Length: 63
Image (cartoon, rainbow, N blue to C red):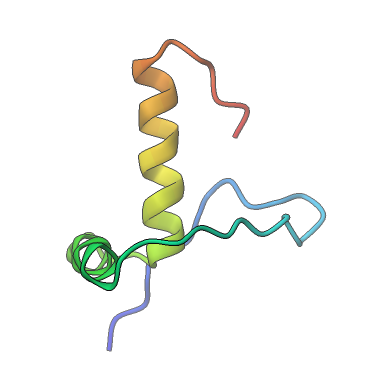
């Protein structure tokens, strides 16, 4: 079993607010497979994806 890559931009307080969304089981499975292929958790994979999109849009990410 491999250890998932840690998010280098963790919350300074130790707990960040949660975010919930509904997606189809099939889409979640695809996301999980992509995250696993990169050796990270689904949550960290989604955060990285969001940060990349902010950069593409010219929006500086604060984290």
